[in-house]
Image (cartoon, rainbow, N blue to C red; front, side, top):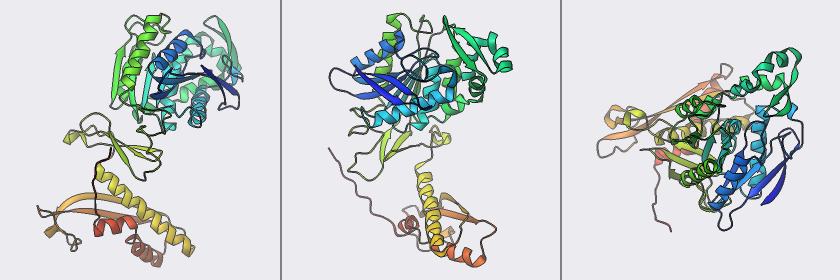
Length: 411
């Protein structure tokens, strides 16, 4: 087990531990503990070690002001916890490898859901007893809320310990939109919850699950308590997470080495597409950038991302804006323009603007209609020249001239 120190979101040193597999590392995970807990709480310790036994190197750490980490808990808030997670992932990227799996317990589950979009390598997120609304945490000190809001801060007793809670902390909780973060999640999601959880009710799992897009899964933790204080429950949770995540996370470590689906090997310059489950869902990796493609629901898709033709249209739109901007820059002009591109298939005989396009076997051609809107301050002369330059965009030319597609198999 290795120790690690990382500067957190508020500048304090965060204390972390790395539970490493005894043999091959198949993936890297980052674990977030529950509210006012720490990296060495029984559930965090047990799950991290169990994941390591299953080949997943796991980093667990104390949020700012808790456990062995520096800083004052009173100065923290939910957003700083999310920032701590991102800072830890940044540090991991240069060492053990960026996490492809995030695991969060209770409020830590909410934190990983909020942080996932800021960690590009993440392929899977697992939550345990997580609230669907982070303001739910305030229920643990509801008797002191009036005093906190009136006085700006108050000492509250939580799990037998005393903590200073500030009004800013409560305001930050209320400002979060966790279900929106869940809806925009670009990773597989596993929601784990105990039906009899008396701290965070099972309805929270329902809300998270319904807000998420596929691929998503739900696993009941049966008669476990909120803290997974029984070893059999903690072991079971870890075993399920390891088995479930194996479908999504990297086959090797660190996450940016060959075999990781989130990042292309450095010798390649292109796009990698991998199955994301479902009928059409496809994950795309462009260097360190991740996208998802899908098809509309009316053709059997889940509408979880743009269609392949949408992505081609997006390339044309982006290239058009870049080309006009570059030309205008050389002329000392300021270009304010938006470009809309729509794709459709039409019969060649019906398209007056498509004289040079060769129809397919069914007589139809692909037609991209580009609409450019210039800001009112653009002069007529500038507009005319920029419209001419738009047709010289490289993607435009590739589409007009056609391209060779070479297919080969690789080992």
